[in-house]
Length: 103
Image 1: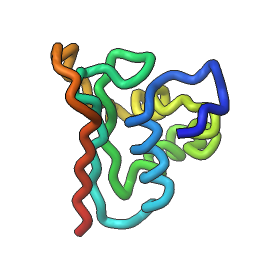
Image 2: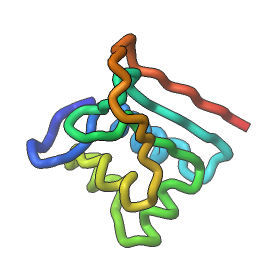
Image 3: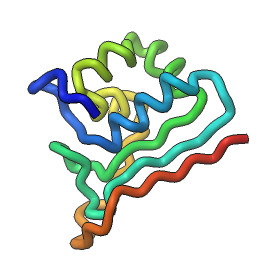
Image 4: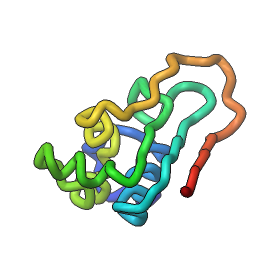
């Protein structure tokens, strides 16, 4: 994750999910990127879900995923398509968790 903006919302797991969605756009994949403590960066979500339709769904809402990624604002992108992963605080911070299914 490269911090380019100080006004963006979200954290490194949302950034990872959005970058993966852009790189794998249109392919048959499903991804979860989350923090085990239930908080990804600056917001209340643990991370985000992404799949081969993420970019298409964002663009259908008028959201430019590349611009959002460059602005370090992944929270806003995933909130707009209801793909935030929200667990609430877990009280345990082991590490980031990432799962990817390629079909």
